[in-house]
Structures are given as C-alpha cells and as structure tokens.
Amino acid sequence: MPAGISEAEAKETALNSERVKPHLLGKTPVTVIYVPGKLVNIVVK
Image 1 (tube, rainbow, N blue to C red):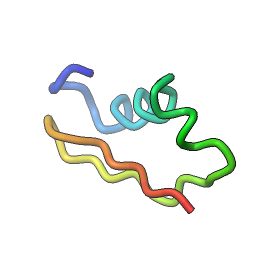
Image 2: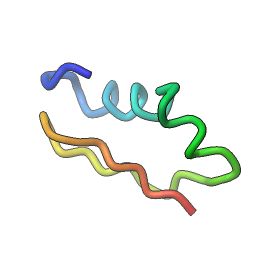
Image 3: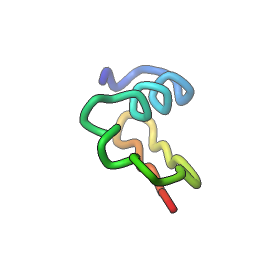
Image 4: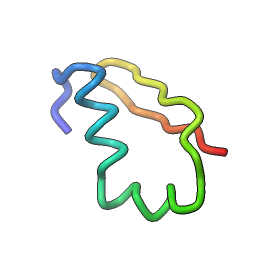
C-alpha cells in the first residue's frame, strides 16, 4: 500500500486485503491503529 494514502483508505485497504481476510474469519475487529506511512494494526476479539 502506498505510504501517502489517507487513514480511511489505509484502513479500508487493510480490512479488505486477501492476506488479512483469513485472519479475520470468526473474529470482530475491535480497533484499527494507523501510523501514517508506517503501519496499520488490526486488533480483533
């Protein structure tokens, strides 16, 4: 994902990623942590 995209775009891209979807099955995203240009961290329960 490009480093300069907005927070909303980064979260949407991460949550819809084919690499992430299997890890979200049966779990609920509690929060999404975004650090501009560095990372998107998804906390699930």
